[in-house]
Each structure stands twice: as structure tokens, then as C-alpha cells.
Image 1 (cartoon, helix red, strand yellow):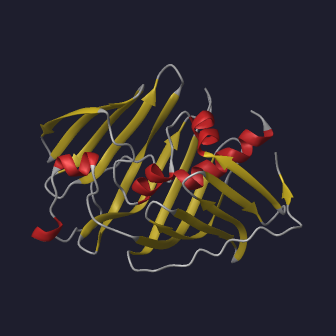
Image 2 (cartoon, rainbow, N blue to C red):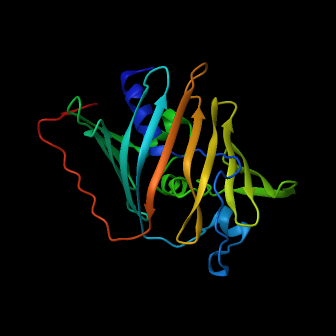
Length: 256
């Protein structure tokens, strides 16, 4: 694994937050009002609820063969425009990240470096068709990729079992009825070795919409390697407008 790839994986994991699957709720979920009800078709291919701004804070914990650690984060985003994150350890800022429609910029406060990734870089290194839109959908707890084709079956236990496909990437998801929570999801591409899966739990209500506050996921960046990420989301809000302070100090080394 190259140095740049080693740097990309922690950045990608922090971005991605993402590749969700789940299990039953550990908290009673308030019943959605008729105004928040949506169809399975809308949940799969559209926007389950309207939003312009989103913010949250919480904790991250990552375990892998090339990076392990934990910290706190503050997250903000604006629809179809930006995802902004500040990462802290023991109360000190160690990284700041900004994702736009075209690219991702990561400031490493600890080593005073700045790295720039295009979404093509991330897609090439992870094998996942990542973009700003897929990132924002994943953070909100929706299916990140709008499938090119899909079919559903009802299963016992109140689930829709979804089989879907986007390009060569296969998707297997479980969506809880009747409130439509993404409670299981796996993405894989056997030829490329992509295999992403995880857990969403600790459900609450975000302005009348189901929202998971605890997420676990794992992925295989290379054969024989595993990456595990735990994300705790607190104080989630759809209020705005928000600010996104981001400035690259001149003294920071720009990595190739």
C-alpha cells in the first residue's frame, strides 16, 4: 500500500461513515406522523425527506492494520454543496476536512500537511462509486447509491429485503416496515474485492424522521485487511444556515 493510499483510507473512512447495515432498534422510535410517511420507491431512489442543512457532533473510533484511534468530531453540511468536519483528540483539533462536489481536502493539524483528493481518487482506491451526493445520503441514513435496478420482497419480522445493482456493484439491504429505516446493507464487487457492511442502531427521531445515532461498519480495502469504524452521532439538527470555516495555512506542506 502506497503512502498516499495509507493517507486516503483514514480520510475515506471519515468521509464515508457510510456503508451501513443494521439491527433492531435499542430505543423506542416515535411513530412517524402522516406528514413524514414515504413510499419504498421514494426511499430507494429519491429523497425520503427535504433538507438544506445538517449538523451533528459525536465520537469516532477506528481500528485497522494501518491506523487505530478515536476522537471527537463536529460535522456540518449543506445539500449538494459541502460536507465539513473538524476532528479533535483530547480537546485539541487534529484535522479538518472539506468535501465539495469535485474534491476532498484534508488538513492534518498534527503534521501540518494538506492533501487533496478528487472523488475519482477515492473511487479508484476504495472501489466504491463515492461522490458528495452519496456521502450526504449516507450520513442521513439513506441508501447511498440510487440503484439502476432493484426488487423487493417482504420478509417475516417486518422487513423489506432489497436486492439491487449499480454498475457492477451488488447491494443487499433490509429496510424495516412501516417506518422505512435502513437496518441492513451490504455492498460488494467480487472481482474488485470490495466488501462493505455494518450496523445502524440506537434510533431516534430527527424532526419526525427515523435517524440512527450509533453506526458500525467494516470494509476490506485489500485482501486480508479489515477496517472497523464506530460513529456516534449526537445533537443532530436540520437547522440552518451554517458556516463552514476552512483556510489552508501557507506553512502547511502540500502532499502529492
